[in-house]
Image 1 (cartoon, helix red, strand yellow):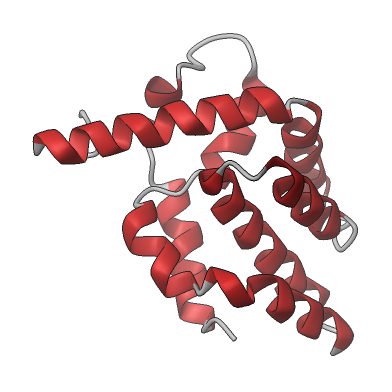
Image 2: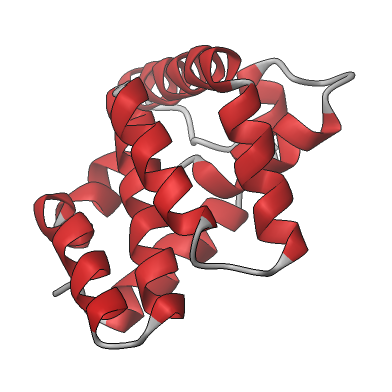
Length: 147
């Protein structure tokens, strides 16, 4: 099971992306998708994914759900979706977002889930571009944030 402090750190890192919109090329128009991607993109995937133990996230979510902890289950499913978005696994992203959505009544999360699901192909393409740009910056020695 992924420790809670690592889950919180992963979520915090995904929110600390002031330039994410610039990197994914969504600088105008689709506010819903921008918000969803700011939440679902990882800031440092090469560092985050290994500590998140992605192979066990779905099982951890199911176990949390079985033990009556829908919040933990939702978080695990969302983190699994983030990893699969990075991996470009469309069916898995959809599966985990649907599972997470079934566990929340929070309108904000439901809106993010709906935006991502309804524009999944565009979200995958944006994520691919974002992660390619992060990798290019890392390869060139530039900081991830162009600020």
